[in-house]
Image 1 (tube, rainbow, N blue to C red):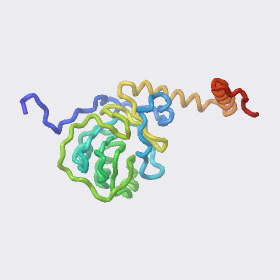
Image 2 (image 1 turned 90 degrees about the horizontal axis):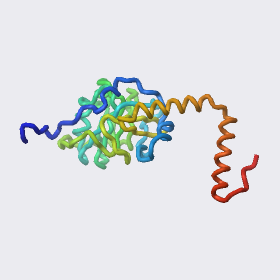
Image 3 (image 1 turned 30 degrees about the vertical axis):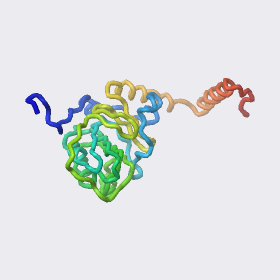
Image 4 (image 1 turned 120 degrees about the vertical axis):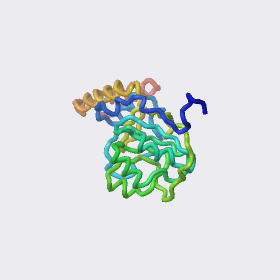
Length: 227
């Protein structure tokens, strides 16, 4: 290693550190998803692991793990800024990348949530503590802690996630917004929700009906819709 090279286990700090401190609008993934391409929406197989999990909105801290190893995930709970959502590519292994104590330490250090393309264990401990975990499932055996993998970017649930992007997640799904567009898009989603809340159902139905009839007519179906 030359004098100017970083050690292999070094990772970038948050590329958008201010997002961990700036209040972000409390908006639904559905509202954000309407404003981004489908490649920013995660595979629905990554889901809340306990019922009633609160919505999570925060800057991503992206982590890659070697298959069967969880070293980089465990390092991330100390490296990520408070308020971060640790987003993990587990390398395709079923072995758990985190357990109850890792969740507890992360929560104590101010980590907002885990989003894991893989599994955890000790689910009851995370649930009892109220620590949000979105993952594919649970697996009782953990991985090893040997492999250093460059982090800062990861493919999670079919989405390319970079440290500093913003994660919006709840029971409706998980959307990742690029960091440089996060404030703009989340503000737009908040305005969209405010407009929808003020709209009467009768007005929505009338506009929806016109849209569906126009779509049918454009496809050659002019039979209309019954009253």
